[in-house]
Length: 554
Image: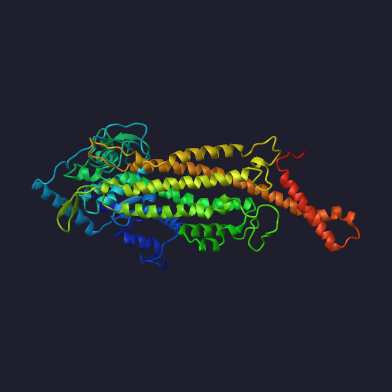
């Protein structure tokens, strides 16, 4: 079905002609800012992605041109049901048309074999991909195909995007791809849907499940008859695995920013030292991630009355001379994860705007080349790093949480952060056990997937990336860490409440202590009496901390 002009209109009826125009409408300018000439921090990238997602949600759509698709756009389409259109540009239509013509010329000369392959797409089990994943994959595949290297007609892409906008999403098995010649099996379900294959099931916006043919009838469309290489142009690519990679990195971005805040909060609850994050420390070991993490945590702690600032620090005070590793070493621990995620984000962005099928057509030279861009090893390795980073974040959260709950380490807070008698209540014991379970599972998920590559298809696909499998496990790992973050937030909020109650009590005790003991020191010099009162107060504080495990009556 030809693409209708009405399908290219935004929600307010205004036609958009290019992605640069849309970006200018959303952000005011497409010119690079000064910061674009320097490496942006992870926090700034995460904030920029969030802002752009909000902007696209307001706008309601994105435009695909094969070169400018980014994380925010994929997230907006996949998770927030924003629409996607092909940018109305002559160069896109010309490139796609020329690739089809060039392909037909090569076919006439008998140069190709196997390009009419129609992958079998049987089966519809319960273990299917979430709609979010499939929407992202469909959008992603369209962006790759419109680059004009695949021999696919523009009409086919327009129909596919129209189905996305109408909420017609094929049900795709969760498993079955080794990401060798791309993600053949998942993408074959998308191609089969376009053909109206009766064995393909489609989920509608209202959650009805129909055959592909019935879905086309409901949408008022005719199934597509695939031309030479169009089937291969659709199924021979990395769209599902790369789309999942984007979703995983998006989750990791949020978790990594949150984790830095979840170091600052327990630093307050444990009466920690702001000096852990003083700029001098990373200045003499200037790894970019460490520098950024130190600055972020220090910024969050700014103005806190609970942490010890450098000005207020008493180096002769009894107790710990320095915070324990989990707080003190957080920038050094999280810094490499920040650097890795920034690298992975760059890798996936390249993949998002690349051509990944085979063969590929160069419309400028008129040549056709055979390669293996579909293997997606770069992004597969990126997911391994992402999953390891998630495990490292989880380990830090577990360590800090354990320190908060343990009365021998939490500087006077009660065991399990109970607000009543410790012998009767076990408030955070369940949290402590759950955090251990989460971390154990996370350690298992952090194991690399790529070493498990097997030779497939009678040794034709002797190497493959297992990219889709790696991404699935990365999303599972992200889900586990999100649960750890939630548990940690609950525990640290309880710890902060108890700490403030404790400090408020001690402060009120300080003012009353003098009036209580003053009759015993009549005639004593005021300065000496003040020192006695301070010493008594310090003794009470030490006794309180030492007896935190006892019930009130004890």
